[in-house]
Image (cartoon, rainbow, N blue to C red):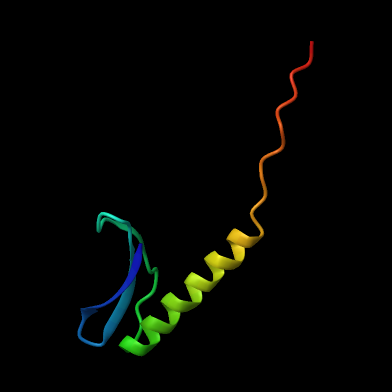
Length: 66
């Protein structure tokens, strides 16, 4: 997977998260005034995903009662 920062219109930048086959998995909700701002937003989102994955817990086991 990779993040791609792109200019959507003059002065409007956004980011996309691409899957292994190049398909867009997620697109930024907001547009940013510069490539640097969009890149920083993508980096911040990536860090949030890393933090969330560290806190990920397994689902509770299913208990079947007789």
